[in-house]
Each structure stands twice: as C-alpha cells, then as structure tokens.
Length: 110
Length: 115
Image (cartoon, rainbow over all chains, first blue to last red; front, side, top):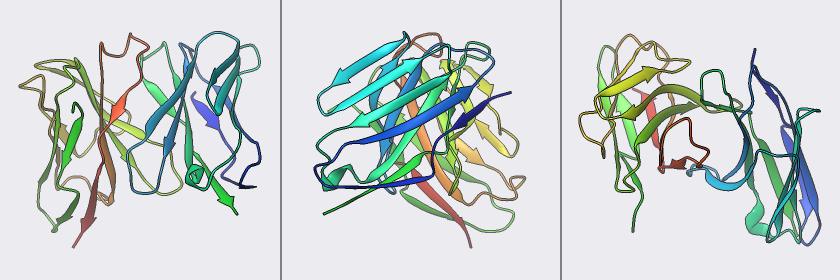
C-alpha cells in the first residue's frame, strides 16, 4: 500500500525555525519531493531528495532517511509569507508516479 | 515566460453536463498530469500522459476522460458519470515523464463546483 503521513497543522513565530516531518510507506521509492502551496494557488517545487542526507537551499533544507522512511523540511528565519501548506510527495518505482501526503498547513504569526 | 495555463479559473457544472478543463504548457515538456485536490486530502492522480497520443489512468480516473493530440495541450473532461466533481483541479507537466526525477510544474488550477 501507499501511505504518507504529515502533521495536519503547525504554528510558529516569525524569525523562528520549524521542522515539518513526513513519514512514508510505499511499495517503491525513487525520490521524495517537497512542495509549497499557498491557498488556492499552484504548488511550487521546493526540494528533492533521493539519497540519505541533508539538502540545503537558502532558508529551506530537506533531510531524508530511506531506511527509516522519513524526511523533514526545515524552514529557518520564518517569514509571514511562509504561511502555506507544505506537501510531501514520494515517487514510487512501482507505477512511476508521485504519491502525495495530505499536506501540513503552517501558520506563521508575528 | 514559460509556464502552464489552466482555464477557466472557476467553473460551474449543471447536473448531467460534461465540462472540459483546459491545460496548455509552453515548457516543451513531454509528460502531463491531472490531479484532483479536496480539502484535507492530498493530491490524487486522475490521468497522466507521457507522450502525444498516449495517456494512462491514474488512481481516480472513473468519470473523467482526457486527450493528448498535441504536446502542449492536455484537456480534462469531467463527465456526468463523476458524481462528486466539486474540487480543485491541478494540471502539471514535467520534462521527461515519470521515469525522470525532474519536479513537476503546476498550473494555477481550476475550481469546479456543481450548480
């Protein structure tokens, strides 16, 4: 089966650091993507991990542990504009498609 | 600027009516996808196409149909057989299809409601 779990909602303060976790159980694994989606808008690509370890891209970093079926997205120096949903998606080797989690809604307060 | 254009932004469907959602891309991507997004649920794959004149069913294809006559275009028809069509529909594309690890790029979506 395919299952991707993320927390439904998180809150944080402007300037802080927040970590959004994603755990997955899929029949195959060929990479994990993180997307940001503001309400009513298109998801935009943030990061991609296929090997274990940390990928850093400015204020955003993403980590992957394939043996644990676990990833996280780390957002530093939070800004109000970071208030959005963050989607974790796994590329499955079985059907070669993206399987999305339900998304984590992040609310950044002043 | 290259991108994906979905139209209309809002669409209303009457009972027993088929409606077609447009998706056009000028990114020269081979693969295109249609997703449905409902509140509290992740994106679910309706149909995908890796190349012109070829498409495959996704996880929730029932009540939907697609065509891929041109590389740039991948319209989705929501038929009267889809009994719960109210949702946010997202079209996406990627450079080389599902075997390549390039990210998918998304359009701005079409919000479909029943009258």
